[in-house]
Length: 362
Image 1: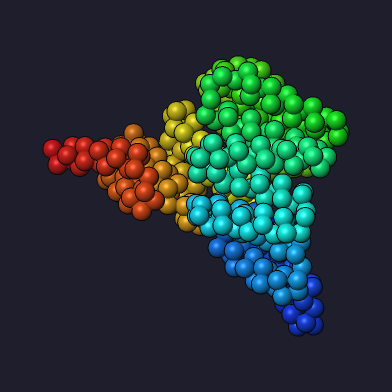
Image 2: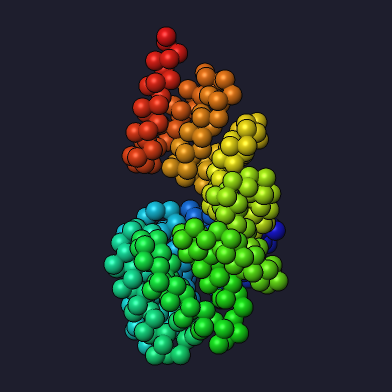
């Protein structure tokens, strides 16, 4: 279990400090950073990673220093601190260049592409993925080549409507992974191709791809990607109004995401599941699902998601006839969205809140 892994790593860290084994201490600090990051506990992850960075510099372990810089960039990006994420990945790239390590330079370029992508700077994202692709092809790094092609396709899929060149990129990536007999990489491409098929409203074909990808992830015991793919399959059922099937698949996805420790993706699945319960007129289950998500959003200090879930709860409570509570949750939603600077939903919530209060007075 993820919580147990952190517990044992903390014990190992204490032991390494008692015997003054700095090599082991450095390894345990890095692993604690990685484990906390994988579970969405980013403040704790950054604390361990900062300690690991200082120790790696002291020990002159340049390879470990690069790994720590990459993970600190990932953690800052996950918490929305884009400038700090770019800063750490830039340091990672410069360190790799100073060592003449093309593989690590490619990884840093890929990381920079991901940060630009989440900040919606698509031109820069594509530029860095392209640079990563060139390095991968020059150095014969097949897995990196396939991933760079996939990243370019995924980025364009989110912003473009002409899917032919995007599917061509996916086909090239699939060919690269097949040439290396990388079944896991193939499954990731199939998962992305499913999303392209969904965009073209080819839900039946998308479902077929998802089923194939799920089988590969299950065989590889990759619970996180199996859970993510099940979530996407649930979205297909939801789009086709197959609500009982969507509920079943979302619940399976939740179980796997919980076991893999991915709390952030659990939030997304809980939001979808609550919506399907609401549309199935299972309001009690919708309320419990949103409340479960709310606990998780507070734990992750995600004010935007906390605001969205408070708003969903308000809507279900109003439908259920509990207006006082509906108003209360709408007010909480407005406060959360204000602090998260989520202006679009905030304006919608404030408008509806005024209507609810006016109706109450009448």
